[in-house]
Length: 168
Image 1 (cartoon, helix red, strand yellow):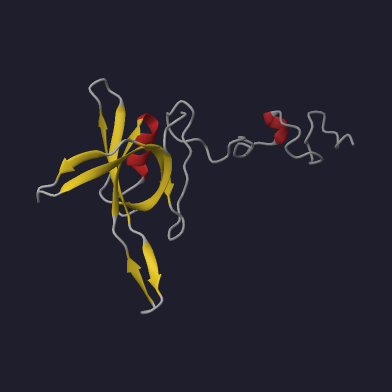
Image 2 (cartoon, one colour):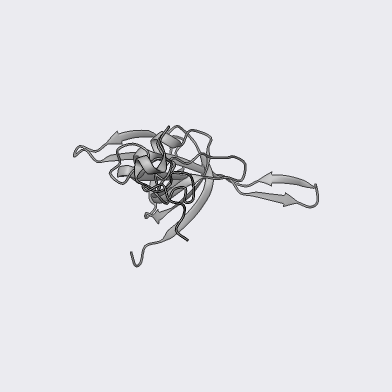
């Protein structure tokens, strides 16, 4: 939408995401991401951590379900979303603070220090899509002639219903 501030944050998930529902049944998940900048100090030849930024993030509907099933505490993630206006509050220690909140548009694991296995969901959200999206693997023990797929192995013996060889 026009006028909204979109940002991308790279950081670690602070606690396991927990899937919950609104009173009207809409699933959502809240999670916090901690992003700590690191800089190299040339005088001491060491890396130094900056001040950690804590971001409260919210995912809705199918995205919330996918987050709850896929991501855990400590996972380094890349989060893109719409920044909400900061809300001021007072900490238990009495100091004034402001919270940073983000409505998640996209989120995924960072592959810089880890690997991931992707399982696509079907369009209707019921289960995973077969890893073979074109379903072109022949059934076990079947021949192309038996399945009616003459193009699966053209030129193979019995590849055509009439038993002929490839016509070209």
